[in-house]
Length: 611
Image 1 (cartoon, rainbow, N blue to C red):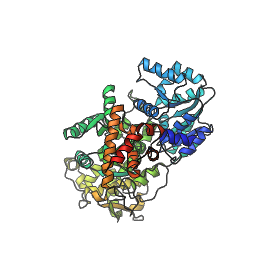
Image 2 (image 1 turned 45 degrees about the horizontal axis):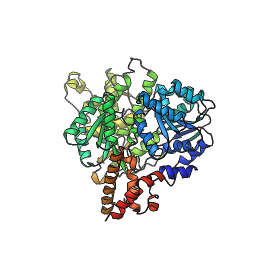
Image 3 (image 1 turned 180 degrees about the horizontal axis):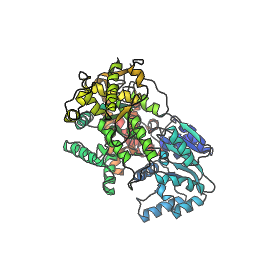
Image 4 (image 1 turned 60 degrees about the vertical axis):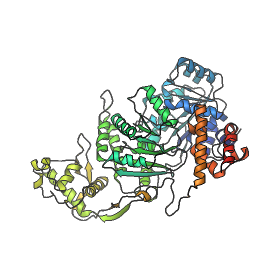
């Protein structure tokens, strides 16, 4: 078979997605590769297809121990012989897997990086049987990335010991230019074929809400999406427990995941979510890297993550099958303080890498700009990754909100002057205290400190706290004010304020006039402005529900997640194409030879009988 025959017969796809064919060709030509491809872009096919075509064994190094079993099961179901080696196996299971590898039965071997130093794995490396080494989630090799793993630093040494050296390919969904260079150097890639297919996911909508009542907003959000499967990320274990308990009390089908749970419970809860026994997963960032559940309709961040890479990776777990999906962030100023604390507390042994800490605080600042900006959200994170983007995407909360262009020079001068006046008294405070002074608060702290005697006390009393805070955030982003790093993030004077105070520079920003209502909410799926979405016919909806019921029944019989039988995208394609014969069924997205033989008759029979 050639690459296209493998693509269709094993995986059920007629065409390659952007970048896939180029990476596959490079690997088959014996070149190293470095591929930056967004979640849902089909990275795994870029090494699975070469693994089936190359003569030897392919090792896939991955940190995703909890998912390896499902990944290997899905490959074997598709007729791709695979095995895995990790700490979740008992001695008998591990020995059986190793026999299948050394006996030439398994073409693909998923392995945790911690296993690379085992003598039996070293012997496998020295046997000359390895044709390809794949490093998945390759950003883990960089301390400047969002998920650094020390075990990844041993991978290059492992590859050096393999004779002859195999082709090496590294894959990740998120990597800045700095992280990409780290990957190249730490893995000792040799003149790799490098490709970045773009970070945009048009099927995802993005929204930020400055929620005063996060629990109320979460319940309101979920009430409109009762049948949808989604992930809710919280910053701490305590919040995970609180939010999950609240949702269960309100009757939602929710479970939880964090590092403080027993391993058995974590696995059970993950399976309940993966197998659709639970609709909602409430979790810390310990959950989800590489999660292969294709029907996640939304990812909601209850708290702001520490950096854009983490946010994009976690939000990207929505809509993996290409279906429209939502990414919502509930933001509050307390999120910034919580993240600063987590960044500054150091390692478990108390050691502090101050250079890394400063780097992570800068990343947090960029994430805060994303959450507080009036600009297009999609453009914000694409620019962060060095990708050009239009100023309007039409599919994020900022683009769909109503803003006015406003000259805020006068207000900015008042804010800057207040910071100056405090500096003259040898005092400095954070945003909240300064805003309270500007708006004339009579709090005990202000009155006892004598700050009501400042010339700037109360000079913005007529402005709302929200507007004042928005202008404040704008001044920080412009560098006119600086939010200092430290135990207390106080405000200091930045660069260029003299021009503003002398009225030599005008400041114009977008101020929110109206929050988007339900009709103007982000349209998952990336519908272009002015373009109407194609309506989903009631008859299609009825057929889709029948197909989902059949899929669920088959999945229960085979003890596999529903998406492993067929993804939602495949079922929707069945609704569109209405195949009534096996020949027609083979043209459905995601239907390969094995699935056609296993499921073709039962699904086409259902479609023939649908009225």
